[in-house]
Image 1 (cartoon, rainbow, N blue to C red):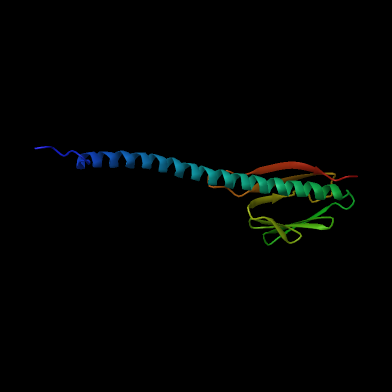
Image 2 (image 1 turned 90 degrees about the vertical axis):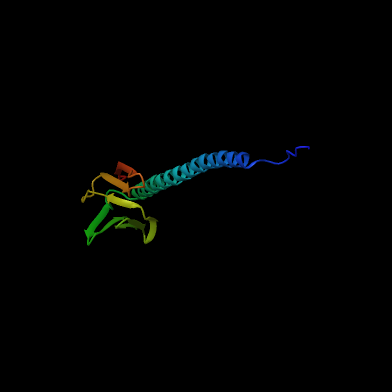
Length: 146
């Protein structure tokens, strides 16, 4: 009698399936890890970008205002308002607006501590914490032109 040995056995099929499932598990884990890293880093970069954009806009607006015009601040009912010439910044909760237009919804601290129209004014902007608990923070001194 001739033996017919075409095809695969059940043991061979199970071995191949177990090896393929291990490979797919490793590839899937690497993919999920990469996606998680991408989204976390993207959120961090977005928060840093928001803080930089606001600081850049503030710097531009301060350069348009003279010492005599100065800045006016008010803080009432959890709403901080900063007026620089014709531009008004409003910070409430985590939302910062410039002339009523939202600049960012990720700002936890927006401080302009000076209440007098000094030539130099310290400004501090801090974003909300990202998924890693990190905050983007910029602090600088802005000068009114004379």
